[in-house]
Amino acid sequence: MDTMDCGELRTPEEARKIIKTAKLHESELTEITQVLRFPNPSEHNDRLKLMLLDDNLLKEIEAGNDLMFKGDPDENVVLCTNTKTYDVKEAETSNSLLLVPELLFAASTGLDETIQNDSIESESSFEKSNASLNKSTESDEGSRPPRQIVHKDILNTFFTYYELKPCKPRLTKLRKILEPTKYQGLELEYAVDKTKLLSYEALCDKIQASKAELNEELEKIQAVLLDGHYRLLEFEYEFRVLSYMLDLIDENSWPLDKISREITIDSLKELVPLPILEAMFRFYTDPSVEEDGVQFYQYKQDKVCKFLARVLLKSAGKFNLEEFLQAWKDSVPDGMVTDESLLSGIALVDKSSTPQVVWGFAETDLPEEINQRFKILFQTKPKWTVDQISPYIECYATEKLNVNALLTKYARASTQDGVRVFSAKHMK
Amino acid sequence: MQMYIDCKTENEAGIPEWALVELQGLIQMKKEGIIEATVVGDLHYYNRNKHPVLVLGHHILNGKEQKLEQPMAVIEKVIVDDKTSYKVKAVIKKKLLFKSRPKPIISNVAEKV
Image 1 (cartoon, one colour):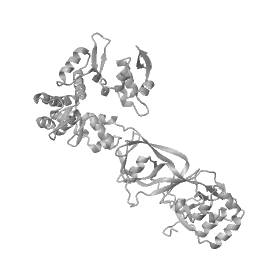
Image 2 (cartoon, chains in turn orange, red; image 1 turned 180 degrees about the horizontal axis):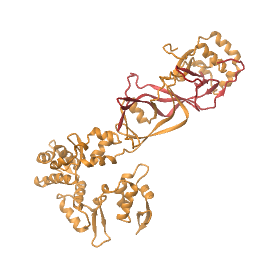
Image 3 (cartoon, helix red, strand yellow; image 1 turned 90 degrees about the horizontal axis):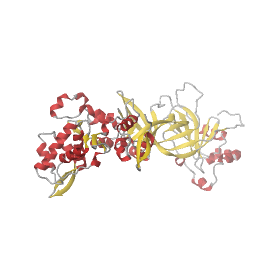
Image 4 (cartoon, each protein chain N blue to C red; image 1 turned 120 degrees about the horizontal axis):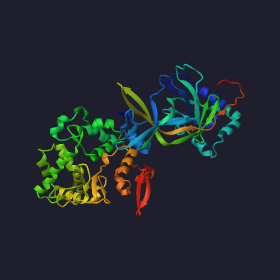
């Protein structure tokens, strides 16, 4: 018995009396009686919440790893581990859930092994003990030691709990909050509103994603850590730096798979802040060969070609396709191959017009809201194949709702010259 | 905005495991203005099948020990200097489920419990 306790206490005699009144049979019960109590109101804890876990979260908690709730007042809260994001919802139950710390389960209340082994039948013990009530209770009382009593307090009663479901990190906000402080070159730094600069901590605070997911997205959107703040590179500036870098290929007569990182950085460090230079080199190259302990690199050709296509297409309006393809080819370093297929997601080609034309049409310039986006897509071009439209709607796809399912939902399918095409759901 | 959930425990044996007792309906105390801990009921286990039995006032509830389909964490909201964080107090893996109708105790002895 817990003698430290105060409040209402049950004595062994009372417990035995209750067993008898309830027509239970003490010899059929394990040795300990647990007396459940509502605690002293000052110990009642309204600050507690229950939260369902999956195996991964249980492991994180048992390992003592930290978790985070994230969300502004206008956002649905998510829970983040270091690598994953979970959607948090409150669920209700009509049963009451009584939370009892240190409750003993059957195995810890002195199971009598011999009786346990003798008995095979189950469930009907209540009726059985009823029948044998009179003869057994008398013998119980005579020979048995006093019942062991432990008091267990119910910390709180719950009718709700949090449900957690793995979800995609919510990253669209990231680009938006970094947009106002794009880096445009040292000479234009004076124009940047310094109060809007964001550190990694500030981003963690604002973005509903785990650190791993946030880091991955920062790399994907090419945000660079400069003087403690993450900065996007302004398009013109990125072009300037990339041009410097590509010019070195010719200047040094490097084969395309023998780009020297050391010389690139050394040659340009006076022109470009080092963190940006290093990041740009990482964004645009892959390691290639190693010779005499020196690692060489090669440019990601498709990425370079795509970027240079965007540069050419940047001025508004349509271009003669043939002329564009020639200009594009001339703009990339010798040996790199431009291909029309690389224009997917950055430009549209109209082959039905004379002459054939191409114009810039970037995913990032489209509205974020899905209905708005489909509207613009079908205004721009009435019929799309899956391959053509995919780059513009992939960002909405989830594991459950892939691009095809999105098209079924938001577009009308038809067949044109044997090719499946999608058009607006409602003709205007 | 982010709120830290502290999963560390001072307990050397690791994070404590607590339990749930799940009942249909709600237990209400007749007494009002309770100022000290108050007994709700007596919980026993049958030797032979380990099933729990709960005597609650004038009712008997027969239940079962059950593993939770999904484990739970008990978290506590902590507010220090206007800053909200949470602390994981325990995990729950098992519960005692009393889902059958409570059986009334029919007493032939006029005795007050």
